[in-house]
Amino acid sequence: MINKFKNKTLIGLVAFVLVSGLMLSFTLKNDKLFTIAKNLDIFASLVRELDSYYVDEIDAEELVTVGINAMLEELDPYTEYIPEENADDFRLLTTGEYAGVGALIGNRTGKNMVLMPYKGFPAQAAGLRIGDEFLKVDSVNVQEKETADISALLKGPANTSVTVQFKRGDDTLSVDLIRKKIVISNVPYYGKVDNQTGYIKLTDFTTNAAADVRKALLDLKSQGITRLILDVRDNPGGILKEAVEIVNLFIPKGKEVVRTIGKLESVNSVYKTTKSPVDKDIPLVVLINERSASASEIVAGALQDYDRAILIGKKTFGKGLVQTSIPLSYNSQVKVTTAKYYIPSGRCIQAIDYSKKDIAGNGSSIPDSLRNEFKTKNGRIVLDGAGIEPDTKTENKTYAPITYSLVARNHIFDFGNKFFIENKEIASPREFEVSDEIYEDFVAWLEGKEYDYTTFVEKSIEDLEKYAEKEKYYEDIKNQIEDLKKKVTHSKEQDLITFKDEVKEALEDELISRYYYQEGVIEASLKNDPDIEQSLKVLASPLEIKNILTASTKKK
Image 1 (cartoon, rainbow, N blue to C red):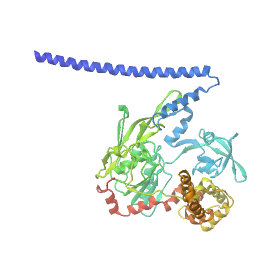
Image 2: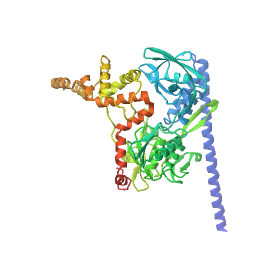
Image 3: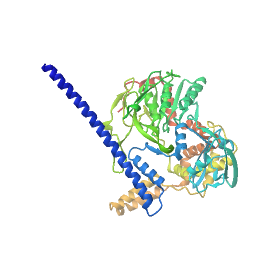
Image 4: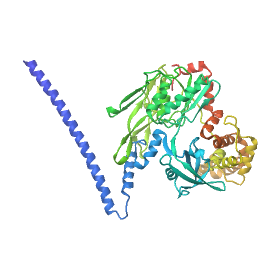
């Protein structure tokens, strides 16, 4: 009898706790919904009253958009509002498709011009060249317009016409173009670095990225390659599914590539390989750098976790946040962060904690003391919280101030225009080199043009002088500082000799782009790329590969 009473009491207590919990949850949810509704009503009332009473006319739509964007900035840089008028740009980012003329445009020295026509599309087919300055698009004068406005005028429904008036040198020209559906390839170039080594440059993760890589890989294998370099440097990422399928090209079916974990059960997913790989054994290097982000980090990190590839380059960006596009009213949408992704070892590579911000509103880096250790398939130690670290690090390539100045002041770009007008063709990207004759022509062309700059040593002396004055030592060392200034004052003419090789390299890229476009620039860059050199060295040594991929190689 006593036991029955105890049981009934216990059941009653449990029921009370459950009902109380449900009521509390219901109350909290209702309170939250009321708070949201109340503040939305306040916001709407505020906009209405501003529109009625503010001394000047206001643009209510613009004002609300500013308010929305300011609210989203409180969260993270990847949660953003996309109004209806920006839908085409968002579609381009996610699919790589749009209808237009197929050219990258930009502003150089205050002039809107073609920076790169895409090979095989209307702009290039009609003869538009790098450096052509836009004057009019149809009847609209665009000389003073923003680049984004010109881009919008050039885009439109497929198979419609647009007339472009432009300036080339001293000539004013006009061309009629038919807009076409533009599909930008995720793999602008692939080829053989040497007889055994294939190379694939992956620049985006839009629709068909995996198909583009697969096609390149199969073609290279048909050409007899026995090892591969996959380059995701400067790749900002994109569609998660494409990253999973690219990893699947190199690892067996049924393996976990990434999982997403968020607040809602609906965003929690595990992504596994679903197909047989194209090649699960080919020696593989993945090139990464500080601008490799998101989907690039999934590919690099998953292949590292399975010890399937050697990563060479610099530490990646560290974006481990997942965005989902959610439709809103009036054809607008919001791209909102809904989850974090975790690669096979269990680590999240997100490097910035946006929930903890400083006074300026910036997210805080995850300190080394809070980074956790994980292990790859072979037992190698890898860390979370700061992007993907390469197995073999390479140094950043540095350039002299004179080279920066010549590029920044567009002298190399302008000389490229001059050279292209005067020369109908050049050798192939692999064979072309800036000869001494071309270089001397460039130096002569520079005469009288402004490209002054401060060398690193000169800047150091300026800093020394400033701090000496501040700390009252200047009078004591004034003569020595003046002597130093005289000794290190740079000669632009001498710097053009001292740094001839790197100026030549910058010139080479610019000239090749005129004749062979983006593909040619990538192909030519393989000749002097330290990351490629390091990759070839590693791939040529099976022992080196084994040493890197064993547990004895540990992260510090």
